[in-house]
Image 1 (cartoon, rainbow, N blue to C red):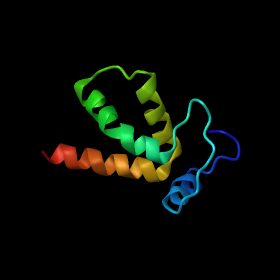
Image 2 (image 1 turned 90 degrees about the vertical axis):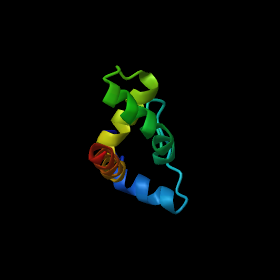
Image 3 (image 1 turned 180 degrees about the vertical axis):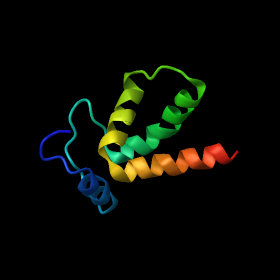
Length: 80
C-alpha cells in the first residue's frame, strides 16, 4: 500500500465529493464501480485479468469499502 494512503478515507470521502489523487496504476472508487461487473464476470469465466481489470483487483485489496461491495456482489451471484 502506498504510504499515507487511507482506503477508508478515499471511499468514504468520495461519497461526499472528496476526489483523491490516484497513481497511474490506481483507480478511484467511482472507476472501480464502473469496472467491477466486468471483473467479476472475467473471474467467473476463469479468464485471465488484463491490465484494465488488474487495477480493480488492486483497488479491492486496498479499499475495505469496495472489498465489502465485492463480497456482497459475489454473494448475490452465488445465490443464483
